[in-house]
Amino acid sequence: MLKTLKRKAGSLALATTLGLGVSTGIATGASAVELTMYYPVAVGGPLTNIVDGLVEDFEKENPDITVNAIYAGNYNDARIKALAALKSGEPAQTSVMFSIDTYELIEQGAIVAFDDVVETKEEKEWLNSFYPALMENGQTQGKTWGIPFQRSTIVMYYNKDAFRAAGLDPETPPATWDDLISAGKKLTKDGQWGAMIPSTGYPYWMFGALSMQNDQVLMNSDGNETYFDAPATIEALEFWKDLGTKHGIMPEGTIEWGTLRQNFLEGKTAMMWHSTGNLSVVKKNAKFDFGVAMLPAQKRRGTPTGGGNFYIFEKTSAEERKATMKLIRFLTEPKRTAEWSMKTGYLGTKPAAYATTEMKQYVADFPPAAVARDQLEFATAELSTYQNGRVRKLLDDAIQAALTGSKTPKEALEGAQKQADRLLKRYR
Picture (cartoon, one colour):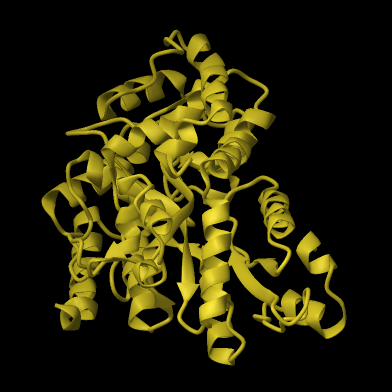
């Protein structure tokens, strides 16, 4: 149980544990503000302990504000619990949720734009201090609705020892699709695959990388149009399938998101595509020399950004919004953003984080920590539309149908596009 919850007792602790928003104002007196914050975890590692520590530091500096930081499960769980609390009449004040939830949250009237909350010159400068690529999923209608927090890009982890054993240069990871195939064939042997790309959990996210590498985005910036049946999108899915069925460098069918990191650590695959949020866990647990590289290119390099943004819920008082802004600004200050990145592997969300003395030294000592940041130059927004959950599922199902062979990539993606068109038609 979180340390922040341990300080609660009786019904308050029970309500918090059950995921109910609490705003009782009992912390330090009549002027105290109590906030509830949900957050998800989608990768391994002691992230709850790290969040606990950051929240405790905030409370020490702000004794008039108490924060109930509630681990809510994965990203989907966090959204469901936060919205359920909103409807229950006991809403949270803030939550870290998918950066791609923006359109759905706006449509439901659940959140407020940060532009309507910031007041001072310093706050406005803070709003413009993040990497533009990370802001794309949180901005629409000329406003900013989400602030980057636990953000990522997909990177390629590779086993340098396996590269050496296969006669490959461990300092020259695959830079193109052709390189990936060539290296993968040399690395594939009994008990070890050349590469693995996860196709459960967040298959649409991995596919966003492949399609972008083939110079094709999956949706427009207004959230009301998708390009699942574009020729370059279909080619990208055909390539993904061919890695298993034609080239034989990864298992055919689906590959589990949740067990892939362990497969890599156990030497069952020489390369894996996964979130940079796994970097610290891999660094701690790998018993071999490993590297981290940008994803390979076809027509260009490309990866979607990913992960969670902070949102402020609409059902908050002026006092709660001010306190929530204090919390979010505290958690996204350069030194804390750098600390978060070093402890987790997630991106430092602003250039100022990488300018801190601590982060400069960390990157100098451990260059893989800069790969996800450098890859932002080639990044695009993660798949996000109105009706996002349903649209995303259409694409996930199409990807899995193609990879398992129940449909051709063309059939699967054309079917998904037709259904997406029906869902999004009224938003055009």
